[in-house]
Image (cartoon, rainbow over all chains, first blue to last red; front, top):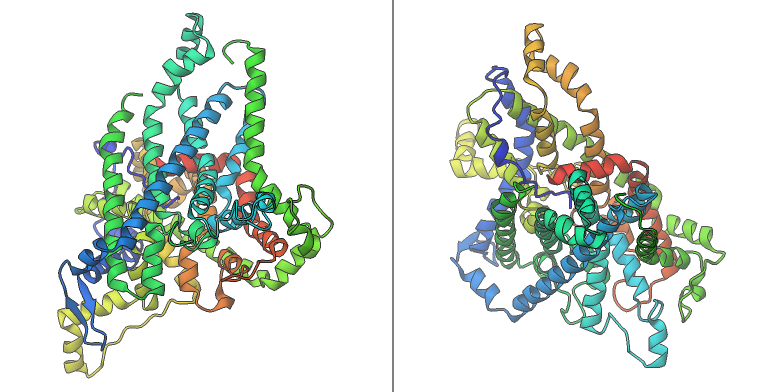
Length: 309
Length: 304
């Protein structure tokens, strides 16, 4: 998650040009060289190669790569499996985002009331962010296991009443809960930071005018949190499109019957298990496009709203 | 608190307690599972209270997973990623903020565009690069005809190879290839007053001296915040280590954890697996709880 889409605030600060600077022609290049080398080899080259692979096909007898134009994309878009993967990705992304943002907003509003021990409440609510996706995936898989988990008792009443390894809806539900469980903590930190930056004078003035806590929540806190809200929405969506790999791989491996075959998991499965590099590359390009779009939305629209604070 | 509302305060505490407990439930159940034997963990309905086998399960998970060497690998990777990112980020941000040079803005954007695409979406070609990290350079030599030229002139067949699979460098380097830290450092450097730079120059300090004696000591807070975030991030990596460690002995803790459950239909020994999960999540959890202040600060700052 700290792969960090950090485009916030870049543009406003470009005019913060320094006058007092060093002028040695060679040194700055030496200083950025390590970083440039590493992003060239592990970022720009692979990204470029993804584009090449997406438009070519490897010859089965090793005759190099043949240019095939958009054919790989046509194959991806004509595959029913791909569209079902897009559909479940959207269900997962929307489900986790709504759940995680809603719960975090509610909690932050209450912690911000500065009830006694709010510092301790903060620890009690942010620690899930530290738990790795595979660990929490494993734990949720056990908790919702059909034979050993909390719902195992349902299966003794009526067989197969709950089984995420057979029922796609159950599997998706389990995945969304695990994803939201992880994101709640993260969103909470940001909502709380946002709330605590609201000037106290504003809240006190409203209280003096007779506005109760609920009224202040509705008319001051929630509207002033709008930028944070949109920011988190973009981050949550991005995160659930990319970072969900660990959860899916551990909990469901895309099953049952592709019910949880999220886009990022499908790229991995097609590329490394199906050895269809061109197909996986084409799918990567689509997902990259989606990420660029989300970043653009964040940069373009969310940034604007930031000024209103 | 703006006004006294005892009833609302009570409700607030109640709601917070409820949510804190709700967040804790899965981990509590995992802990309980790790304290029972195989029969206890498969009991219906599920056990809510711990049993006597906690340490047996922990040591069983520890030996079965070979966690001693897995922890070592994960620790080296996490520290490597943290240190590597901090050093690279600081140097790059220093060059971008404190120097006047052509192409400064181009380099700035080249670095910051990497924030947009996480490793997951370019995973397949990144893997190809890891199989031979010098592949980009080889390809450039091939395309520009230099390979041919060198062979004609010197009679040497240029074949650059640096296999990163199953190596520590292979685990660390691709995770460093983002700009998270550079961005944070840039934000921090922009707050350094210009007078400080002027004063340093007047005292005859060169840029490197300025970096070492002024910026590094001043950036302690930034560094601590970044380090906690990066350590947790690196320790929790899963997809990349899964691909790059094809030999089981080279696996990280997270990859090992995923291998503790049999693929296919076999029922997992949940008591051992849950003990393994608790072990695997302990180091980052300890960091977050002990360094809570830095962690929160780092989290909020890296995204801004």
